[in-house]
Length: 200
Image (cartoon, rainbow, N blue to C red; front, side):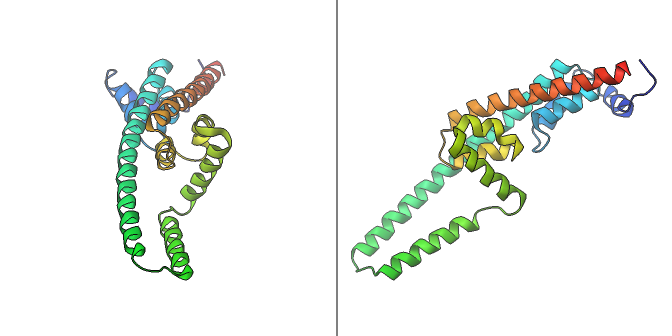
């Protein structure tokens, strides 16, 4: 091996952490949006952790976090739909006793649209969500899940899919598949990079 190692500082830092704790550090990194399973696995490999250990730990941390996000998002969506249903029923009861003009109905629809738009995040996340929704319509849940990391972190992808009405079990299945696939690809890339550096 040549004397050149651009990751020597990172490897020395990780070497100070007990070997049994290193996978947990990688798993914690995998739970962070924008780092996720693939990023934490790649960092772990560059830091000198065995590729298989880094990949499994990073993916596990990402998957656990995504499952929690899906569970919370599903519960929040159920509560929101229940409130909306009660509000709709109350509005229908109130309007049944009066004659509703066309302008009133239109105003109600406009207010509903404004409320939905107000809940939409701005900037990069908004663009990512729009792209994800297009993929969902075009490729279904499998395609949107596999392409999702190109638009949003898996945490936000999962929450967006649940908010769109997709079954939480279906979301979890395809998010797990996507996390494993992307983590495997980045693990192979990072391993190849390390091999190339050692061979230089």
